[in-house]
Image (cartoon, rainbow, N blue to C red):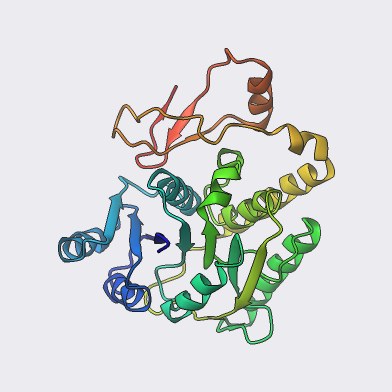
Length: 292
């Protein structure tokens, strides 16, 4: 039987998290669930701790502050690799992605390395108002056309990954720490596999709470898209980016976490490849500490 890890990141999800975890186990009873909470002031972390006492398949990682949605997802990817899962499933914690779609996603993973729930193919949809619908649709059109991504959906986080694919991906080259992580991660994974698929989902607006996407995140996403387009135009530079994804076996000196990411700039990363004595710098994905 495949080992499946379902991951979500939380910040102020006290109104949703208990029912979400319950529903995930209802639809995928044999899976494990990992939740990364960024010090939610509304008590989300406390609720998760209480749930984990009675549900042994629930793992909770508490981070000391908001460290970015992208870093939480990267942590989950490295957690899945380290703990030898076969499949990693990621989703939002606010019921934007209903757990009822989980069995379909897992079934599709049998024939694919990557599967994403799509709002933009026949049968899919979203409950946004006009402005957010236009913004989301435009972002996806731009991403898939600029980067030549063979999917209608590029930005939602309802995804399934074969962990064998994650091992081949250059995770530390993904530098985005916010929402642009989702486009950037697809850009790198399509360099490694053609076995990708999408299936229709209906994207529900938040069940409870407020949206966390800021104007800064939108700006950062545009900048990220420009950088990825440049890499797309420079295939030789992309080919040189061969950082060993297992390069960091260090433990964080602050929190003893094994989950780190290389935070060198692209110029420094390329230099490292020709200079084995170059000193690397790492950022802990669990506490945010930076160390050599």
